[in-house]
Image 1 (spheres, one colour):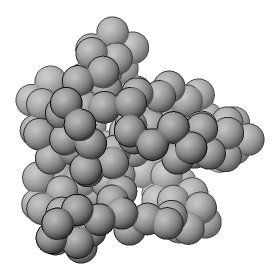
Image 2 (cartoon, helix red, strand yellow; image 1 turned 45 degrees about the vertical axis):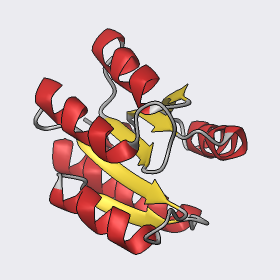
Image 3 (tube, one colour; image 1 turned 60 degrees about the vertical axis):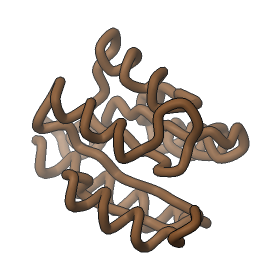
Length: 131
């Protein structure tokens, strides 16, 4: 497999903020990734069952099914799923939620606002690890 092909992934972006979802979708599609989106964890779990992605970029604070619960459900269905957790806050602040996300199996955790170069580097690393 060529290096460029190894760095392209099917990615599910999960965030209740429409602007964040759209921005990430556009940025990742410019990088040649195949991107699906979901507005909450319940939709994400359904999509992952129907159209599995290799990487899930997951907001932690969301309505209906929050990110920590979503990580647990995703990992029950696929223990090797690669999750990148993102968060901009909550009552405890993003760092505590993100630490919990990594304890539950997230490979990377980033505070919002996201630095796209950091996110891209994480995705490249996950793609290389799976190649």
